[in-house]
Image (tube, rainbow, N blue to C red; front, side, top):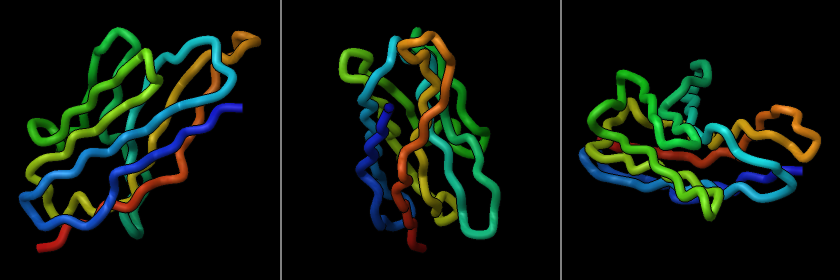
Length: 120
């Protein structure tokens, strides 16, 4: 069983910064992508950023130039540095990993979510 533990959410003023972390643990053969999604009240969950095992990245247009995703493969940890935060970034942020389990089945795992609130 794979677990994702997130940390780093909180309340910040517009223009401020936060850094989210997510550590994956459990029975995995290898990790493919790690990423962050978010869900604002009344809206669908959306992709924020994703990073491949080789370091390739993809960002939502709304966060390009403000957010940076990175990962430490040795620690199975992904980070999201969020700068110049805006009130519209307010959401619950979920960590996701796509991985190969020990039976070489490709699966997804999700974190419990961490709330980010950006005030005016």
